[in-house]
Image (cartoon, rainbow, N blue to C red; front, top):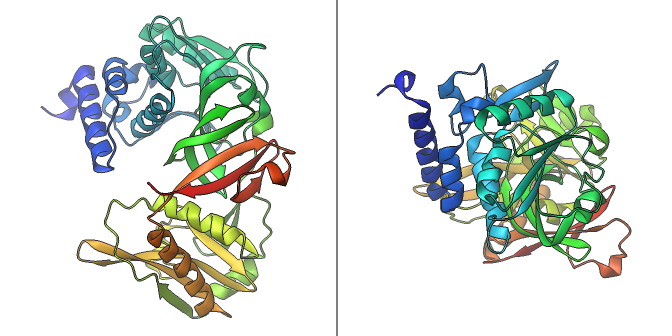
Length: 412
């Protein structure tokens, strides 16, 4: 049967089969209730005007609104939705059934999946700042048979329903900070799942409330349309060479000409001297490098590059969409492409003068330390802004507008 002749049910089952296989390839297991919800909800009803086979691509988000060239609303890729719902269900003791959920960022599709998961005794409220988005969500939910989902048009930086608490708050827009309203609306032992930019790198964190703070239960690499409204925080990009950019998200100041001049000078390469299997979670390594380098170098930044710049040999990043990099005393260094030997790989760093060899060696040393420590996973602690240093857990501190983030690491 060709894709063109497959029914909605067939396409939906094929999508979920692919998602289950992709989970297994990552060493994950999809929760059965999440799989069941994905097999029931008709995704094509939330993507009108889009070919049905495109709506059911497991790795593709569907853009539903643009302002100029900027995407401001989309129906998220199924793989990411499945992972975030799994994070929520894993972090909530007893799962999602019967829970009361607030979704921040409306497309309708994720809200309907949540409605399936919480069951008749639970509830789902979805909020978005854009009236066009909420009107569209109301219409799509009604057509799909989920008219009992409450849709609110508001800026979720402020409380949605004063005095009401939710067992789960799930955010489907890229956030730079965690406002106090989200924690205040979260039940004790409740869970917040949020794509949070941490050192310029976005992870979906599942955070459990403990008193006035949050502690992470899991995290996944992801990307999202940025938050709008009073919670918006502009991500700045600085071009340092043709097709090469630095991502500045925490107030860094960079002279693009001086850094670009470094790239034209000879580079030094250093290797960690390790042999890792393909399943190693290098997203965890990147946060490890951010935490270590942030305390050592003048500025920690994130390098991104177009494929043309990589092909031309201008840079050789490990991941061209976002690789840890550092500026220190006039030297630029970054995590470089992997070196494969049979079925294992080594980790490397590139650096450009004047102190390139030492800078590359320092970064490679931190990579080796991560491997020697058992490839530990990051744990994020979120505390209110103004929390004294003495009340923070030991770790790397990142101060935001409303919160103080502390990054620690734990081995399995």
